[in-house]
View 1 (cartoon, rainbow, N blue to C red):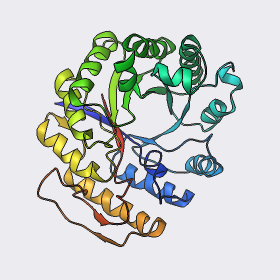
View 2 (spheres, one colour):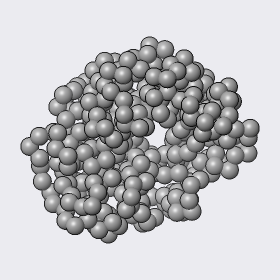
View 3 (cartoon, rainbow, N blue to C red):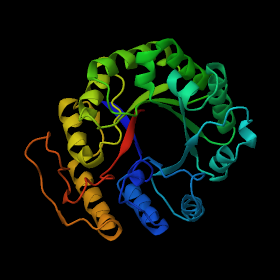
View 4 (cartoon, rainbow, N blue to C red):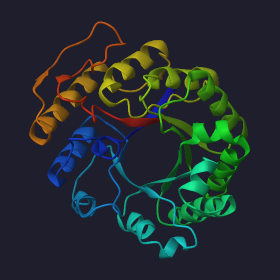
Length: 316
């Protein structure tokens, strides 16, 4: 049976949705809940983005976790600035977490039009930041932002950015469908190309978004095609159903059982009630995996619960 490793992103992706404003106390409670369920990795926020996350990482050092290891999340260095001199990168290292998750640009369009820099400089940004992170963390995950869009536009360059990460010492390449707009066959093709080139050197995972309702299908496509990876992320309110559906369709991948997912939904519902105030919360179990609501915690609110367990599953 293949094993997958959950990198939970509730406190990062989940915290970015409208209507969510976790307090430091909320975040600490969620970490302890995840730990009690045996989640091995928790992406807990960006210490360089706001004072609240800085305070959280200071307080989190006092937690006595049995299973979970915390990961700080942040971007590659800025163009023309050494990683050691970039305040955002320094804040990542200062968080003191055993795992660092670094995201960088894979799409040439974003390099030239958003970062306003050259393609070569972006590759150096990826390499320099990960090499610096590698000196300060036991494990480094590289999040290839918009990878699948970048691969479709310029596959050679998208793969070159991954090569820079691997050369710098990345332990995991996490391929992101950040817009949630790619189709399963596209995800399968691109993921297979990455595994062919890097699969013997690093672990490869995928981080899918559900903007077009394809997160589950894309996860299954990547896992079935490569027979190596079954990584899911940011299913938003459908993650619980998606998680069970992935296990049903790919039973060799064992992640969380139904009881654990139910416990998680109930615990996070309490935080939701005090944070964003949904109209009602009930524990139901939709009959079909295609239900729009999570099977473990059906919520009626002005928008779907954004943190109903988000995360990345990585092969072990």
